[in-house]
Length: 524
Image (tube, rainbow, N blue to C red; front, side, top):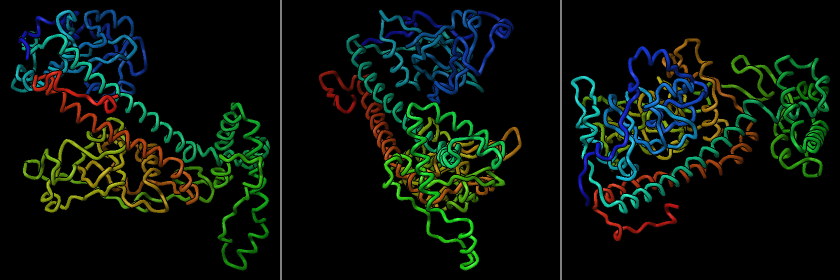
């Protein structure tokens, strides 16, 4: 395919975090921050979790300049020198200065000698070969000398550039899918938070019933709700069409008030029937042109009052709170004995997906595959629970709060709880978003809540149960968005498999340029 060259002959720079001197000086001059500062200190964690948004560490401009030889550029290759020694990553564009963290090498390719992205792809494809250069009885370590002596089979530059173009086409499409899904996820989470955390429609109805005058509410509401009502009123007033929205909400409030039974009539119904009338109040909102469609479809189904719940605080009146195991069937996964290899497989054929917490990473919404599978014999022998498709799973040990919807029947380890067959007209989308937004810190008072939570606590955690009409309306508002996320996720999986099949054949020379036909519609 090409000629073999030593990696050292292609490098313009090979350095690490300790390049500038003694550890004492490093400690004095370099301090890490969680909040954004001048530069990012890039770590292995960011690459392995593909998290360059919420999991970054920062350093000051002084620290960045002190670590002068550790400055990272877009397209540089980062290599682990100790933990998982020899594994490589390609530096993306974070639109800010970047410096190297400890235990990493920075490899900068001379672009006149080779395409740096091709070299990265070659190192990834031949990772076992690279790791064979790491030495150590306890912790494997790879040295600079070993890195320089790695042999790279280098094809003609035109072939390098072509392979990189194919790779970047896939990266662009996969990145677009990922960003689209992140936007869709943010949309459904924002709607959920508005309806079921901040209770915006309830506050809108409450404010409308008081003609949007807070002084009319101050004697009837506790301070906590008054403050929230103030914030909601300020949010409404900030809208461009605030006047139209207020007119619509007021018209809806008057419609509902006209149809509501009087206090005397309600008391009479209790005396005669022993209960209140069960026919829900339903305004003829379509007959009033002042009521906007959005309010007719949503706010008409929300109350305009709150009541206090011991576990969740103030919640909309008429809604209930129940234990998690009363709103869904909850089971816990299991791990067969690890020492007996026959219970596990890396082949999906005739085996069940076995999900770990690591498989749930990457902010994915749906999950239908994993790195390991359980044999049918192990599932039967050890009574491993099979999670049906369209269930919701939650990690609750060590890493607390990862949530996914299952795309197929699968199994999980014992650190994951399964929420199956939701009741009270709850959809899987509601359960998923409720678990995503839940404050898990409320489940215990220890500083290590992630290790303190157990299955008993999960089964007893409080679940807000809105009325059926609101739940139905919410499902109708988000199910198409979830379908789109699922579709994009499946497309991403297919493209990833195609990329991982095609690129090794191109890099090894098994496929030549004339042999390759790329479906531009698939990639682009």
